[in-house]
Image (cartoon, rainbow, N blue to C red; front, top):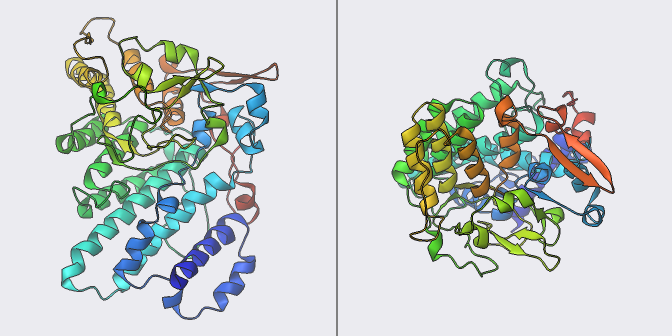
Length: 455
């Protein structure tokens, strides 16, 4: 317990000292510790313990994007009752008080770097070499995963012809409190994310000991997501292929109880990598009212309409179809097979392989409609990219995906969207490609470093 506490102190010093409030008080703490063994893990068991800390490694995915997205609305009274930070995210107002969404991912990245730097220093017996390699792969995945989460919030949408000249986020590749913090280009962000995820594939197992840990199929799914965001549809399709070759099966929603308050269990059959946000009150079922047009887009024989949603006492519609297995304002932010099927369907369509795209989309929907009552999409002029994107939104709402989807789809005029909110009789709009799609970096990180603030 004492060793775990001191590891946590080291982590807090890095994050609060470098990224948030400067070295200050942490320098004194660190200067008192000359023996590395009491401030860093010293065995594979210690390293596994870091990865097994679900509340830190899996339970703190940033929530600003989900609050800012358009799958729901709140009443003015609910907005007023939320924290100032969440109110600002909801109406897309400038806010540089974002320590949670900035600080949390870097804390986890530090953990990953600590694992990667400790493994070579350990005297690992031959019998434990495979375990060490698995830990290395999982740490590489996690470092890529949270750098990607940060880039999606604090950098613009990826554009291949502009990425080298676009500011991304600082890449933290060492557990070094003295490392100078600078912002890399968005191109370098994505290249590092891809390198880490591809290297992780060398070491990750086909099946992890728990779905809260990365596996080879999860890394394939993650790379498919990254390449989709980069508009590299060929690579995204290939990685989706690799994932679905291993894990193609989907849950048949005919076997899910629509009356259950929590329809899906944690680590259910479709989950590839389990991760969730911290609780955001504004996203609670008693506040977040699902967009009416979105809810009405589900046909009555679409089982998701009853499984995903419930009616509140005020007749508003709330979302309950969370893959976290929780009936709270936490949002599933991990990877699941349904997303991979939809990535491949979109990529196939964009690559001109319409019949194969149809097959993927229809396979997914056949598991979502009442048995014997599904009418598949057909290869007609009515089957367009808009159809696939609409089904993607209907399947993946409240997954911490909508914000990044909006950013990439706003780059194309035919798929761009103007977001609108009304609070206290004031109208707010977020135009496609607005600078407000790029969040302000936390004010303390700016104050105590040389990094440049977003506009």
